[in-house]
Length: 223
Image (cartoon, rainbow, N blue to C red; front, side, top):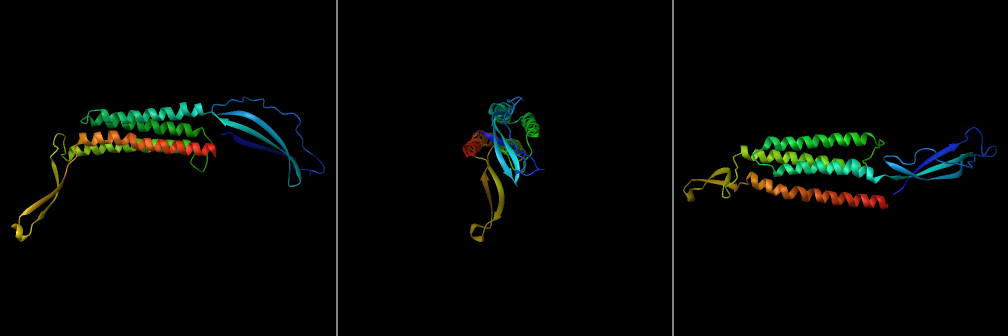
């Protein structure tokens, strides 16, 4: 969707009944192609602002989508894939898994900072801000899930014990049952099972985010 950048030229010292501003010939002598946008056209209109003669110069700009795809979307997706691949590492290798995921998170945050630093400052979230925030949150959650999987080992929930139960509490029985003790608990989920669940859940959740983001971008461009 083209963006319009207006520029007003006003002769503020004299009113329009004494002087009239007219631009007969105009041209764009600079480079029309920038790394983020292209100057498509120029329009000039005659105006009168508060009884002063003026000219409205309007530049029609078009975003360079290839720049954002190559500099933002492709690298961020590759970093997320690297973090996701840690779930295919050995479950026992927590050190390497969390190191790779944290490195990917730090690189992603640095990429976001450098890219946004070259864009105009706004008080609202831009589309590129929403994308990077979603990617950073997704990467952070993947790191948290790796920590949770490793915590299962410290709690003693290991693989290969499908019938294992984790005791939550022990409650006393009534006199009818002989006054004994009864253990209440739940079936434990091993680290391998939790890792397998996250292998499926992470792409599904991020895929929903991508679909919603694309729908929001299309609606913004069409509007």
